[in-house]
Length: 544
Image (cartoon, rainbow, N blue to C red; front, side, top):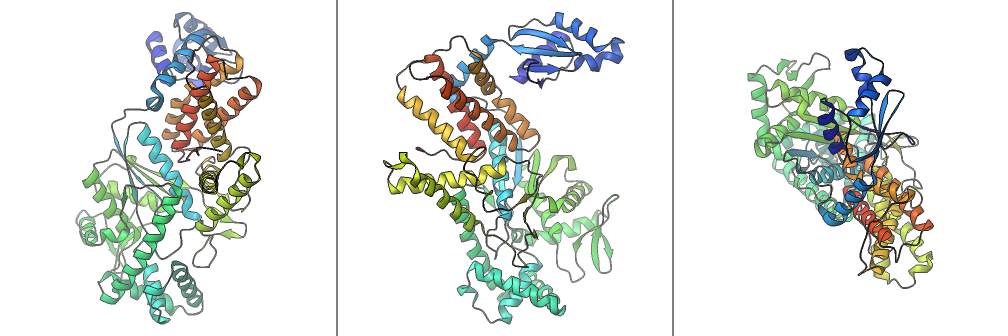
């Protein structure tokens, strides 16, 4: 709707116009175009705004006012009613775009031989939400899970397994993680142990049979656990290609960097210099590769295989320097402009006592959090009077959907850059501005529509509360565009909460059944709220 209004105004006024949502009492949208034209026209903004106001003739607006140099636009009721009719008519297709471009989204990317920690939750659900948003807007979205399955840390694990004479086939993920923690505790007392870890990784890269066999067992165990977690979260990623996938491509990357004089030798290693950043290494002096080498190989592979128009990396903010070095190197290599890449650097989950650290044994496993969320939701269902007619199987299914929805929404409602201090109570919020509140509103709308089944919908004149809800509904696509432009699912979460709040106020104030107009508004709310929850990767239960 916003884009349509801008197009009309641009045509009428002979210059490009951009609209912003107005403050309360100042119309629905406003424009500062008069301030922009002040220097050109040599008049004050109030005069210019008055001149422009006269030129605007459109039945989309009930009126146009000027205030303090701003043009304020009031959307007409007829236009709002037409948009509501469109929502009811199009349903699933309403708001969808036809961008026709391709985006590769790199997200989740946990490390093997470690339990799926709470720290990887953010990348997984923010990344999946961005994937849903871009796909909804008509992009050909390709999701990639770039597993951390290669590097010196696996040399450390191999050393510890051999040192303690463990049978890798009998080790659980938890035990592998404990071995990694013990390695670092011992390395703090004996620096030579770190060198042993590097030596074992060098053996792994050179194809040592024993090292490869142990590594494969650890990788397979990890993938089994990851698949279970993704299934529980309702996350489906198109491609899973770990760092090891690019092993055979690394030599060519290094040679190309040398040939193009992007990389230079330094103390037996090969590095890349940057004007405004520290240098980055693509080959260590012991001839082992680095994260950057493997990420470069991944970029080249993705360019050749997918020919994307844009790349999104949903990776923690602690990797900001690495991402900048990667994007700058891609440009230096002549593969693509760094402007085609964006790093969605999410803030970190932290403990009250500091950062999570697997090597120090300071971590919280996602399984624990998911389990607690489901138990908490189930307890509330058990205490509810309305749960008497729900079977045990239904209770468990609802508890799963509600508990996981609570965890997801609690994260997605925050801007991705914000750090999150982990708190067992706050991470699973079931009341107020929460996932369950939105799910409940959606289920409530569906219940009303089922009771009104067979009734016609009719959109008559709108009262104040009805107008506000319909106006909110028509802002859906504009909201999704804003979320995509700023890589911020929290914009959709905020929108969904406001819509749910307005509808519940409306529901409490007016009887809906028997009123065709109010049933139409309820149906519109259900359609849009369900779409918003889908974009946030949150499922809606059948009952609640």
